[in-house]
Image (cartoon, rainbow, N blue to C red; front, side, top):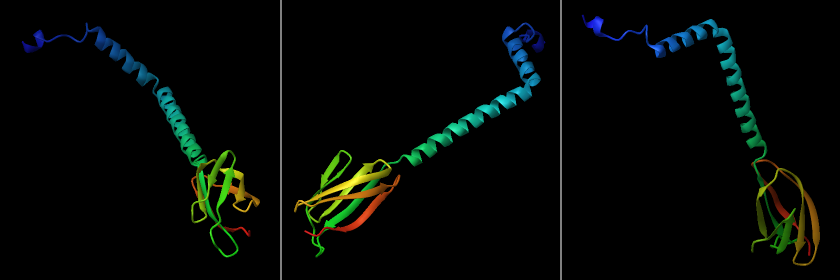
Length: 136
C-alpha cells in the first residue's frame, strides 16, 4: 500500500528532463570527453603562460659601492633611466624594481666626474656591481 501513495516519476517533467539529458550525454560521450579535454588543455596553457610571463618580467635590482683609489667612500649621484639616487654615507647604493634588460648607469661623483656603465638587470635578481673604483 505504501507504494500506491508514493508519487510517480513517469508524470514528473523534471525527471524526464534529466533522463533526456543523461541519454544525450551517454549518446555523445566521446564529444563530451573531447570538449572537457579541450577546455582542460586551454586552462593549463593559459596557466602556464601566466606563470612564465610572471617569471620573465619580475623586476630586478642593482647595488654597488662607489669608492676612490684608497677604497674610501665617495659621495655620488646615480641615474638609471628616469630614476635618480644618491649614495649612502658608505658610498653604496641600491635601485629596487628595475625592468629586466640592459640599462645605462650614469654616475656623477662629488668631484664632478661623470661615468657611464652599461648594466644588465636580470629578472627577479639583484645585480651586484661590487666596488666601482672612482679616482678623484
